[in-house]
Amino acid sequence: MLTPRLTKSELQIMNALWTLGPSSVREIQEALPKDSRLAYTTVQTMVSRLEIKKAVRRLKKVGNAFVFEAQVSRTSAHRRLIDDFLGLFGGRSEPVVAHLVDAGKLTLDDVREAERALRKLAGKDRS
Image (cartoon, helix red, strand yellow):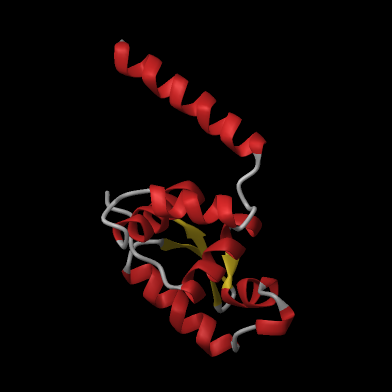
């Protein structure tokens, strides 16, 4: 199943669900950062949209409130974001890596971890 494209606000809601686990709209809203907390009704609308996108699903009803759970993993959502971002560069990672190096945001440890991942991937390709 294709991971849906998520907006920045939808990702905030998904982050709350990934952190909290199954939650009501009120619990999701209260878990959002205080300085940029969305209104309850806004969160409710966005959760409904996420349900339509099949990113979340209703798990059960407790009193008058529905409890929702994530249907999309954090990893798959991040991969979709990164793939979409790289698409802006024609699928090439070089401009992104060059920027990270220039900005001092790519450490030697990051490079070593990437090398380990590439060696592991190369080993899988041989099998």
